[in-house]
Every structure is written in C-alpha cells, then in structure tokens.
Image 1 (cartoon, helix red, strand yellow):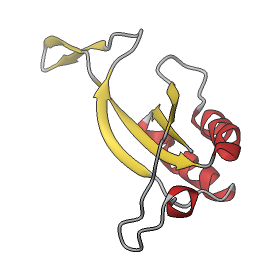
Image 2 (cartoon, rainbow, N blue to C red):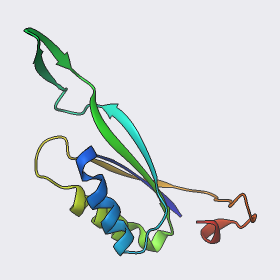
Image 3 (cartoon, helix red, strand yellow):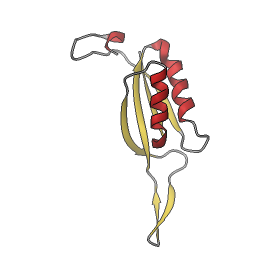
Length: 112
C-alpha cells in the first residue's frame, strides 16, 4: 500500500475529488493548510499599508491505495489539479506498512 499526499490549490478540490471518484477512490482525507514553495508568497495592499502574505492557503489530500492504483491516482490528481501556473502543488508517494480498520479489525488492503 502507498499513501499519496497531494498539496493543491483550494479552488481545484472539487475537480480533483470528482476525478478520484470517477476512478473508484471513495475515501480521502482533506486538510486546509498554509505554506509556500518557490513563489515565497506575495505582497498585498490593504488600507494603504503593504504587507507580505508568505503562507498561502492550500489543500492537503491524503489517500491510501493499493500499490497497483498508485499511478492512476497520481495521474488523476496531477491532471485535474494542473493550472500551469506557479503554486499548482506537489504530490508525494509514501509507503504504508499496515492499515487497520478499527470497526472490524480488517488489516491491509481490506482495511482501505
């Protein structure tokens, strides 16, 4: 199993969620996060005062899938979150040793 973590722009969440649903992914965790990459934020003007917004709002998706679905999920997220502009985000693939469904005690792929 692998855990796929994706950091995307907030307005792309519905599009990514719909695409994942199309390929059979029905469970994911969504977290509102803040961060920055190469763009290092930007400067804004508010009531005549200039200030730096260095942590931009992002969405973090966490999805655990069997090994054979990793490439399909990565492609789905990458394709639907892509805008071509700076700050589109990142996708990380991390190995998962074990998963346990608390309600039934199922383990491994069956728990996902």
